[in-house]
Image 1 (cartoon, rainbow, N blue to C red):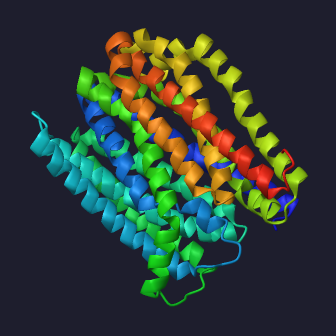
Image 2 (image 1 turned 90 degrees about the vertical axis):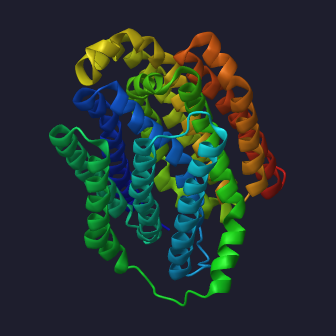
Image 3 (image 1 turned 120 degrees about the horizontal axis):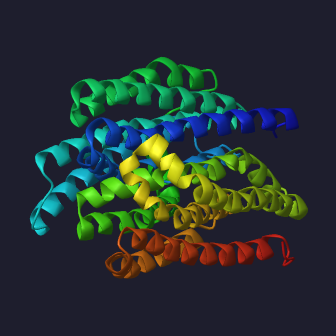
Length: 418
């Protein structure tokens, strides 16, 4: 169990590193607009949105499971080899999706779009492989290494993106250099750092299959959760076009920092929840949930105040003066970001509880709501309808997750409410 000092150090490093990383990710969309225009920004946002779904296949929802595997049921080698398999599966699924779109869509993806999708996928698969090694670090009380990894990768990616796009004004070339730079960083830093904690074992095929089967519900959850979040944006591109997505992405991206901040605040608590749940420490478990909820919910009024008084100024200063007229998109996006953080938090709790059916049920509800609401909301409210549809889907997910968590907790803690 981590000491208070260790937990504090991990909390600070992980939060700082994660915020730096995702601030850099946000800056991609801003720089794309500033350096290459709305069309290139739309192309980048399209590739990111599409690959989100396939990244969920690659990650397989396994990070929280790996970190909370306190009994070491599976060897670290098994986790690594399973990630190689899921990344290969994600690549094949992405190629299949591109072919399917070419068959059924009147206007299939262009050559430039396909190239960007595949390059972004390659770049993000490195992130997926990195997660396995980050989990090894975290299990050994070194989440500070994870934070440093995030910060360095974010800075490196942003520097390569800004310099290359400024010189070439060519997104594919920019993505190629980002991919190669991140691959080099993984080989030279991420893997060696985890190696000091790595216990090499036999990567037996039956163990890999067993792990994949056991985590299959998590993979389904991860896929559904990502799809639920991506459907409104995909529908925005289909209904209003690539340029609309090129505007929506940069304008709403700053609010995602709020979501990321909330999300990575509770990551260091995964081991705390695992320990409290395993020991049937009801009060400690409830106290941990209350602490994290307080942190997430306090961000709502802060985000609303910032969007109200600094939103237009921020867009004009950091994004583009041409997009200031779209500042009305920010406030609803704050609600969406906080709800997303809540969904991810309660999903993590159910993962610790090993309540996979509840995860899948909640996310199926979110998918259904997103499918039913996206087009009508976008047709009625334009770009704002994208956020409204996301909020409705997230609300349904949150309600389902809370109900399942309370039911599971009541059973686990001897029918006493937490």
